[in-house]
Image (cartoon, rainbow, N blue to C red; front, side, top):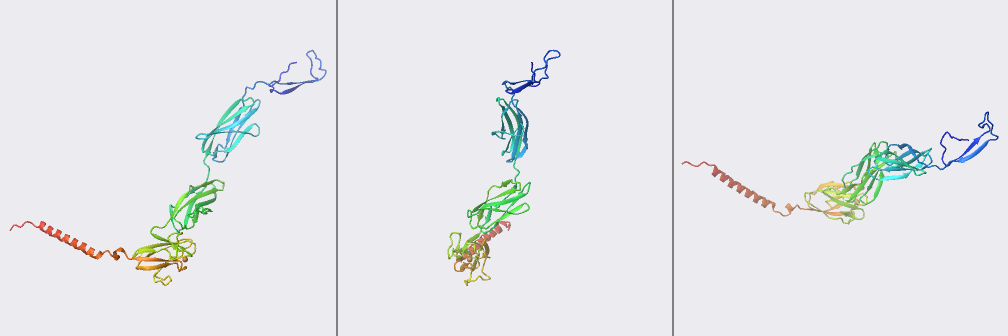
Length: 389
Ligand SMILES: [Cu+2]
């Protein structure tokens, strides 16, 4: 009996053959088989020469924003058996990763992960079979910059001592902004992270007035409703005394001082010259209300003609006045008259003090007149025609 399968049998597989009683022998009309005949056989371990087949190579999506998941998959089959499947990815600008792909439905293999490097990524799927025969197939995908909020933030280079600082930013995104925060380290070294107020795409936060002439560091952070976040670089804002101002710090119990750490009672003596324009900035070192006035007449009451600031508390208070009378006076805080007191000395100007402006001026005038007279005499002599008589 000859047995001819209509298709190739698989290797290393047991098969069962069956001849039933309808079978006849070669005679005419043919003798039936006495009883059914069954046998089994196992195919041999043939030499595998076919590597795996890789089809349906797909990157999903083909363009993905940085940091979001991207799936690479393919259908891998083999005439005997698939040994393993790997994904090798070349990052733009160099560097490669190689990782095993997992078995999915049917004959699919996949690897899902996020890529951070922006640009075209070339990849190769490597597949081996159980006979260690290899095949590969290539593809590519693109990673684009993450879709994150845009933050425009340009804080000023400096802010005055005692002045609040309104920091503003414009924050936009392809989807709505969920939150924008201001992170700042104040001049005391305290770091704060506060939610910014907003209207439309405008965001702001008012940083309290600072008492120390130091730098603050600030940056803005924003998050979209899609969860994507962005932040600005750290910027520096220096806190400075306003130009031309005498800065006085006041404290209920310690008096006055030129700095927050050197307060005394009586406070420091302020010296100005007669006729000078005097600019004073006072800062409340204890955040209690204080003011500053010059008690010209010494009656312990700020009078109409005496320079006086509004109250300084969370922000500083300023005043500009002309030192229009010579003498030694007290400056005070009207709420803490005895502790918060100091001396203002209005000194005579150098001219009034001794330099002999009047004699010198008269002398210079006399010299000028003399020179002018000589010049005129010479011109008259030179300009006259020679006499003919
Ligand atoms: Cu006071």
